[in-house]
Image (cartoon, rainbow, N blue to C red; front, side):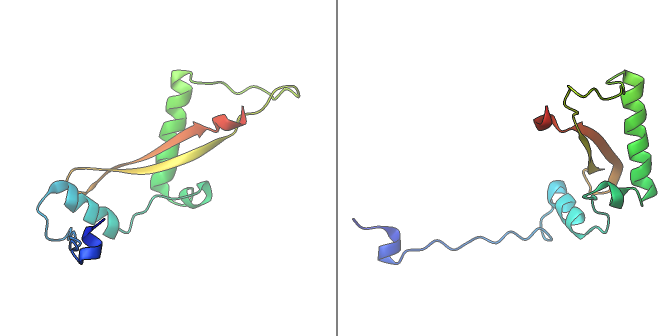
Length: 111
């Protein structure tokens, strides 16, 4: 059996240069890679930034306003479902920051 590799035929690897592309998505990728604003990985890091604190406050107020859940005292026979904050920076097509989004998500695997 003869393959391209055995015959010495190789295909050159095309390198993608995002800086020379004229597409908005490529420019947004470049902006997000070089931007100093990063999404925090933990609550303690996010809580130090007023922009993320505001985003968390808006999310928490929306959860209470919509009646998504209510806090009750834990019962010994029930499993308590934990939660965590997930942070994301929303951007416009040109790569500028649209808003800071924080979501409070339940850890469903603990049910």
